[in-house]
Amino acid sequence: MTQTETLYIGVDGGGTGCRVALWDAAGRVLARAEGGPSNVTSDFEGASANILAALTQIETAVPGGTRAAVGHLGLAGAISDDVCAAIAARMPMGRCTVTGDMPTTVAGALGPQDGVVLAIGTGSFVGLKRGGVVTSVGGWGLQVSDNGSAAWIGRAGLAATLEAVDGLVPVGPMARQLLGRFDDDPNAIVRFAATARPIDYGTLAPVVLDSDDPAARAIVGQGADWLERALVALGHDDSLPLCLIGGLGPRYRDLLAGDRRRFVAPAGTALDGAFLLARGAA
Image (cartoon, rainbow, N blue to C red; front, side, top):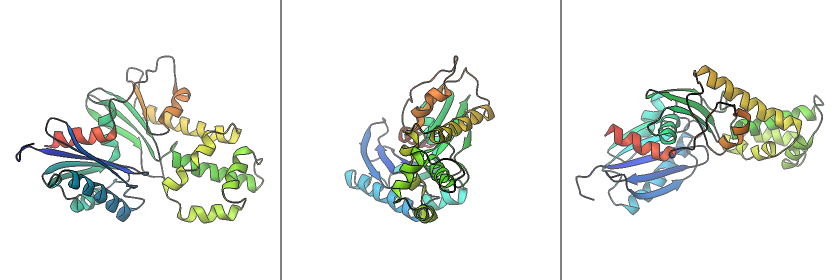
């Protein structure tokens, strides 16, 4: 590495953690690091601290590397210019662009080809790229969006459980298991919900996803229905491949399968996408 060589930093920040990498001009990874949750809407200060801690690890591995680098941060919850600017101002690299995680995720998953990315992890969104132009649906955060995601499923499971407690629906296996997580105390569920973050709700999603309870199947079906609506809203047709990513993405494949639909594996990760966007900006 020469002193004049441009270096690139990519950050992929989500509700469960952040991943950071430093590349040289040839695209070789010089260092990697990981950090804690980095959703800048759920916890701005905590996300900032976690990203900076991961960047410090990079700095230790390659002294001076971050200050000379061009960076792109794709962060969950970065949905306003003000938030993006506030995060960028805290970063140590020479040039830094901050966006939501949709651009980096789509860039990494599709590479140069057109297609649709259904990103379903702690949060969710659907992004379509056609002719290099990306449009998206969802990704507004759990309070008002993120349908089908782990956090959404976990919260929906708790809501269904409280309906069962109230006698509106039968108390099935899913409700019994979720109640058991809270010592069979519905008030404990209410106390949990008062402070729960998306990652906290997401820890409950496996109870719903792995249950054969009709109430659990209905929740997952509602998530799949929303994904279908998102595809229609974006103008998807079967000429465009579908790429299912995130911890829950593959769980929806059977529910979304059609005779003419074509699924493809991701070309890379959101971290790879951050590198591609950083290099493009330079």
